[in-house]
Amino acid sequence: MKFTKKYEQYLGGEREKGLPLVGLKKLKKLLKACRREMERQERIHEHVEIGETSASIANLESNKCDNHCDGSCTVCDGTFFPSLLEEMSAVVGCFNERAKKLLEMHLASGFKKYLLWVFGKSSSSHSFLIQEGKDLVTYAIINSIAMRKILKKYDKLHHSTEGQAFKAKAQNLHIEILQSPWLCELMAFYINLRKSKVDNKAPLELFGDCSLTFDDDKPTLSCCLFESMRVDIDLTCSICLETVFDAVSLNCGHIFCYMCCCKAASVTIINGLEVASLDKKCPLCRREGVYPGAVHLEELNVLLSESCPEEWDKRRQFERQERIRLAKEHWDFQCRAFVGI
Image (tube, rainbow, N blue to C red; front, top):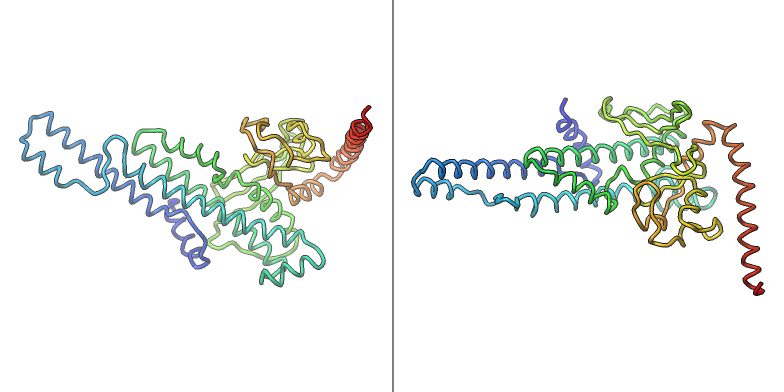
């Protein structure tokens, strides 16, 4: 079955929930209108070359559609990209908000968890949490695929790279949903809760499975969709080249160890990443201003600690000693600065 049909089936259930979605069918209609106009322009050009009468050319001009492409493609530049941008912004905003609330409910304890359950008017049972996490991961991946499919179709139709340029713009605007730190957290969250014996069959069997694998000691968090589409997240810190410990995700979506991030941002572990200068760049993509607002991946840390306990304990002991040393240096410096030494 083609992706469009699968996506339309998926839309049938999600429309009832009132979630924002990528209007794949509507965007395809825009491209179809654009293709008709391009074909009409080609016919006019052919008539001019063979010396057709002005009456024939005028007849073709009279059949001009309202949305026309005249080199700059006003159909796509004026309607297609703004529509897609608006839809993706709504999708990412909705996904981040719902994922944050779900994880907050799961990680909360005591009276706070009770308040979240009462005022959130939602169940806190394992079956509900697993199904909600599964639905959100599916929601994120399928909308991301829809965006990539329609942009690929745009480039194929126009023989251009504007679709790829738009994807890069989406990443800069943080509306590329696969870059969301909450996607990685939800995948880890689903694996952590899946250990309970709860039978939750995904609707339409869209959702394959989430897994954490170690190939040649290289950890990868993976998720399958439609039994053929796959998302892989590398969990190796690009700074220390080890499995991420006390993982944080920057605004650009790249994941590092917390202490490695502090060193890269030239801040102390006492002050944290929030005070990092906006001109500090991500070690991988070199994007600026990505440290303030970094997200601690608590669910991922739980998953890794339970998946490789021996290695995790060794790393924890080393990190504890290193943090004590850095904290001592920080306060020694503060004391010397206070007394003027």
